Length: 217
Ligand SMILES: *Cc1c(COP(=O)(O)O)cnc(C)c1O
Image 1 (cartoon, protein in one colour):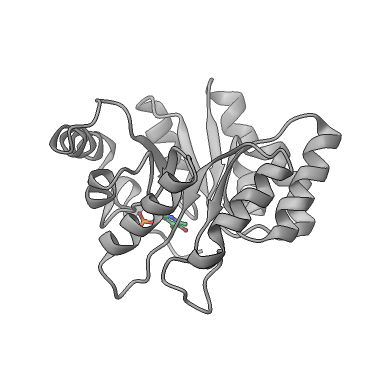
Image 2: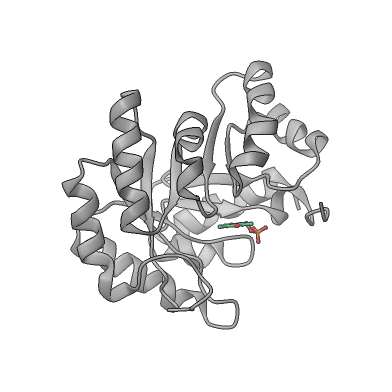
C-alpha cells in the first residue's frame, strides 16, 4: 500500500469526521521490518515511528537518528521494569504504561535523569486476560495515580480484541479519556485506523499497511 496512500486515507478520514487536517499523528510501526524498508520511508520524509521492543529499537534507531534529522520513536509494546531506564533514554513517548509499579519506576528514573517521555496509559478495553493494560473500571484511579506522580500523561492507548468490532473499544477509550480531561488517544492500526479517526484518535499506529507484511524474524 505505502506511505502516500495511507496519508491520503488519513486526510480523507479527518475531513469526513470534521476534524482539522493534520490533527492525527501517523506512527509508522517499523517493528521486524528490514532496514531498507524503514530507510525508504525515512527517505520519503516520514519521521515518526513505533517499535514494540526496547532491544530491537536500541539496535536500529541510534543509527537512523544519525542519518536523518528529527526522528521520533514511540514505544508501543510492553515494557519490563528492568528496561525502563533504557526506554526513557530511547523513546520520545511510551504508549504502554500498563501498571502502577511501572508508573512508579518511570517516575523515579525520570526524576533522576531530569527528562520523561510523553506517556499514554494502556487500557485493556476488552478485559482480555492475556493482554496488558488496566481494566476500564480501574482506569480513572490509575490516571489519578500517574498524575499524582507528576508524570506527563498525554492520553490513553488500547488494542481491541481481534474478534470484536474495534469501534466499541475506541468509543470506550474516548469516553474514559474525555471524563478525565485527557486529549491523547492512541488507537487504530492498519485494518481500522479510519474508524479510530472517526472516534477521535490522535495517534494511529500503522505497520503492515505502510511497510508490507512483516517478515518473520
Ligand atoms: C504491530 C502493532 C501495530 C501495527 O499493526 P499493523 O496491523 O501492522 O498496522 C500497532 N500497535 C501495536 C501495539 C502493535 O504491536
